[in-house]
Length: 92
Image 1 (tube, rainbow, N blue to C red):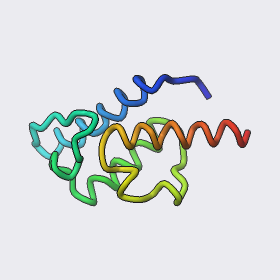
Image 2: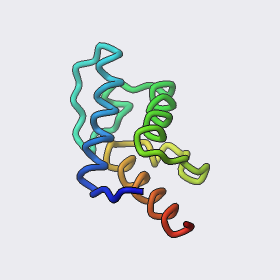
Image 3: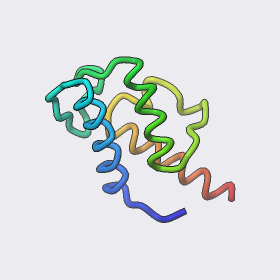
Image 4: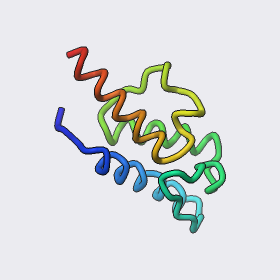
């Protein structure tokens, strides 16, 4: 598994969020701490984002991280991705 930095994870996550927003025709450009629901994402969008995150980072998000707190902002998603990747590397 290649190493990534927190900045790389945040940037890749932000790009995924922006892509979903653009598909919806939204012009919002949320910052790292912007609540994604306030930026225009629905619960269905967040499910699609979860699937995109798993594909982008080649991870499976465990049920312990499938909660609203993990998907509140770009920053919380990036922190969750880093935690999942760290846990996976420790288990290997």
